[in-house]
Every structure is written in structure tokens, then in C-alpha cells.
Amino acid sequence: MNHKDITIGDTQFRIGRFTAINGSFIVAQLLPKLVTCITENGLYIPAVFSILPTIPKETLAEIQGYCLAVSERYSKEHNPIPLWMNGRIVDKELEHDTMTVFALTVQVIVFNLSDFFSDGGLQKLLGSLGLSQSA
Image (tube, rainbow, N blue to C red; front, side, top):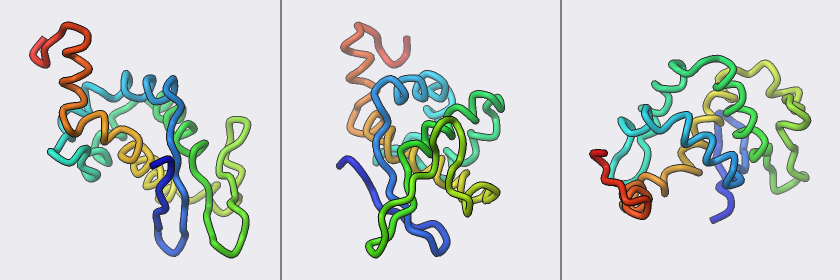
């Protein structure tokens, strides 16, 4: 699936997929911390919430930019409203809504990276590189 519709508060959003380059960057930044968030079904959302505050501000801001860039305010009655363009939030309602931005960040990370951590995705990657998970 290329997108997922979610609701945060009373607002609907459509979240999409990272590019492979952006997703790889995020995995590289978060992998040591995300390993503790893995369940048999992918990533555990509360655990992802708990690791984001431990990331340096500049890295978190870059990751949030990638997350908001693949997100839009969504309504069946109106055209989608982009949230991020040219390195900044463009949705005025979201500009000072810390809770929603943080929740969107977590939801987008989980949507994009859960497959990487479920169904043996990490083990398959390590195996293709000739590495074991204990290496």
C-alpha cells in the first residue's frame, strides 16, 4: 500500500511512503534504538514515541521534515493540503501544533518501517549482507 489514511484528533491525514534514500537515512539514524521497539507485527508505536526524544534536535528535525513531506491533510470533500514544502511546515493549522506533528512523525515512521522489522525483514537484510543479527 502506498498510503494510509489516519485520524489524529478530529483531523484526517493521508501518509505516504518515504523514498528509498530518505527511508535508508531514517533506518540508519534510528536502527540501534528501533531494535527495542520490534514486535512480531512490526514496530510498537508507544516504544517509537519513547525513543524520539533521545535523538539530537537537528536529526529529529530532519526526520520530521521527511515525515511531513509524505503527509497531507486529507478530506474527501476537499483537495489534499500538503504539510511540508521547501523545508518548512506550510499548513498554518499545523505550524504550532506540536502534539499533532509528533504524532504524525511516529505514525509515518511506523507505517514506513514496520515491514523492515516484521516477517524477518531485518534478518533477511543481514543475511543478504552475509551478517547475522548477533554480528
